[in-house]
Length: 315
Ligand code: SF4
Ligand SMILES: [Zn+2]
Image 1 (spheres, rainbow, N blue to C red):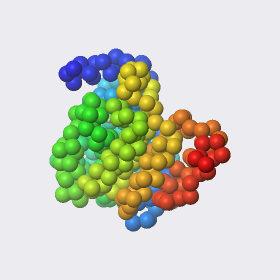
Image 2: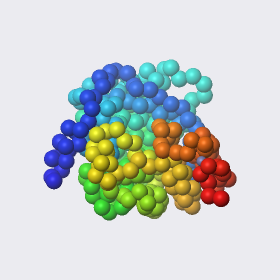
Image 3: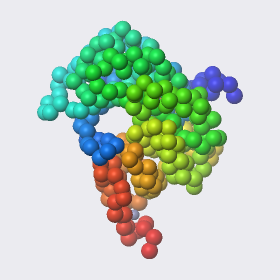
Image 4: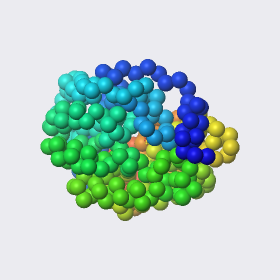
């Protein structure tokens, strides 16, 4: 099936997109984040409302947070300014601008807004944006130069499982990822990487192994931080793949196992994305203890004492 036909099929299975206000950010969160070397940063993430990503990855559900058309010029500075104005307490170290798309896509982030965005980010020591590896290039380096702080770009590697990577409809091969990683390193820009747990077409029994291999691959190419994202169902395409036996919802214990095994990748920081993690299939008797342990692993790194559950831990 050609890529445009796959795009059409994936989009046709989506539920209607909710209305999104281009002048208000979806929200923000202030968190403590471990960085390589052991320091802990206060990071403010702003979830921006903007144009939908031009890619159509089979596992993605971010489109539901995006506009029907391009981002209007002026909207992103207004959204960011609104969140920063409401900020209380000590100023955070890092600003993460997550737009559910690609920051260097001109339709998602109008180029004329970049100076204003850099101005709003001037008080942060670090700024993180997200981008597909294919939209990293000269505009990325120009934006890094505009910032007072250091730029970090978060890139989805997703999986290095060859069959799965080729079938994610992401239009990303290892050479393209490697070129993006090299470009960032050569321009003094930090690399953060997203890898999936439970990528479609990765056999469930090998899921943890491929997540760990994908994280190791990212670290070998210079990632200072890797975030493990358990694939969330619900976008229509994943339910189609599940019915065909090509996708299984990852479990909480798989997420814990993957994070435990990634402790060996230190000094790179590997964390688990715990957004919605309480909904992952898990043993009811120890779910909360495991979520607490995952939060501890994120905050402090590993190893950490295991959760011993009378119901599900081996005797
Ligand atoms: S590149 Fe990122 S935002 Fe775009 S469809 Fe893929 S996962 Fe979603
Ligand atoms: Zn249990």
